[in-house]
Figure 1: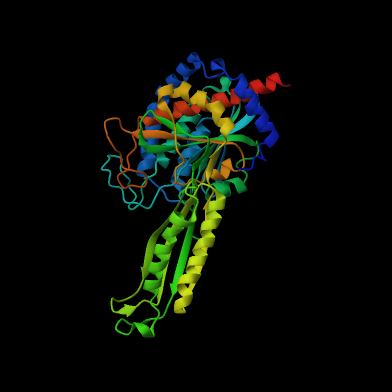
Figure 2: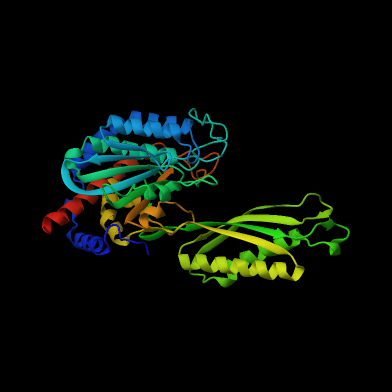
Length: 438
């Protein structure tokens, strides 16, 4: 269960429970406001698409988003926002103050790309060899920038403030560095003014453009990484009794680790263990003296995470000791499970439906992918949703992290519209509650 201390556990639960009963269609963005949002999106659409394509053509890896950061900062400054660059290396924070007093709601976009050679053939394909926006962070950044552009012209309706958070290094921090959501939080992104709740989104190629998916409670898994080294003893392949075969021991470790999920974990508590890299040996006729394994653990709750770690250690002991081999085991806890606060979700679900239509909003089973947006939602109530980006004329679309990943750009205006509705409604709900409870 996430910590709600920064929001105030009693306060947020009181707010959301009261507002759940108060909420009615009249509290949502009305038709006139929705039309105003649509008009402003159309007004800025070309600029927003140009921004997206520029970012896509100039992708940058984690903690190296220098040009992306400059573009975001300049755009926010042109909107007369309070802008703070250089947060967590290359992150940018923009504060939009409405004309009415109220709380601050955050919205976060990630900016980094992946070390993948693009193979989409798009006219705006990546110009940086071996780097690609294969996870849609260029779309996230352009959607949140577009939301800032639209809401900047609607300050008269904003009952409080919106903090736009552009985060580096969501895909993982380079070795020996700090970064991502945890460093942004450490450097005060949720303070001054304090952020009371935060919104985020991710493109989703499994769903058609125009579709929104979300779930209350845990939506994404926690993700850990591990490194194992099996240390044996080299010998000639014709005289195996003189050595300790690290390849054989490693193969037994791989098989037994897979049995953790099938035979040692409660089947109603989903988990995945993947060993994605094995390296060792020098020649086909020499026993390898060392084999290295690298992998990831995905879980939906922290108790399961800790159990898997303990079972892995037991397996390593049982497989190395009989052969007088040794091992080293490094287990690094990464992102925690991403949690959507259920009460915040119950308030904002009508806003989603008002933005894109009842038939386009669907519930989502928890997914085993991971996202460091969980760092925010552990501290304050968070609401994270998925935006369909599969073109309607395609039966399937290339998945996230594919060299051919190409989200439908028609999803960008939909994402902006959705965020505008959610942000205005969330601030309006809070304002109405405070007005009714002086």
